[in-house]
Image (cartoon, rainbow, N blue to C red; front, side, top):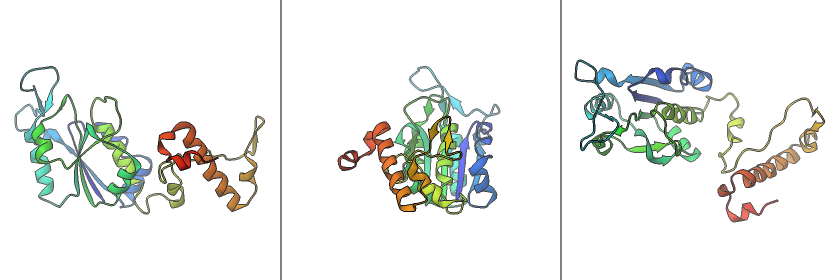
Length: 231
């Protein structure tokens, strides 16, 4: 999988994309991630990537020329499944979206910044807008890192333990169950007997019911009526 990230602030992405699972995916050849500095495509001597909005008002807008030049250069080298813009108007990033993205071959992610992006970029280049939540960030770089992390970890072979991924929260529409490790008793708090039983079916049943209870308590909106009535 290849992901090209277009940003005016590439340093914001260095840390999140060079550690942990994403680092493993890159080093293992599962994901090829390139960060493109938008200022390299600016046309004036000051390397400007933003300008004031027509009609007045506060804030700055990302200019169309650098974005068009960058995306068109990339598209001239290969076909892309999606050109994504990180944007508050986009669909909310959820696990199903990450699953679909993980099955693509080539993605471009444009990091929104400042007040917004010239609408002509959205109309002519962007195929999908994604938001990571109803709050305001300084720019879309952190959102891009979230999209990449949530997507790349789903690529076959990236996680050493594939079963661990299958039991993650949201993978089957539920939150994950509580988890315990040694010691079996800590400060008079005991691990549930089912998990100490050695009975695989009993453990699986406990985990499934515990996931339902956790989801019902914290995110009942995820449960259809028949599952919300489960014990």
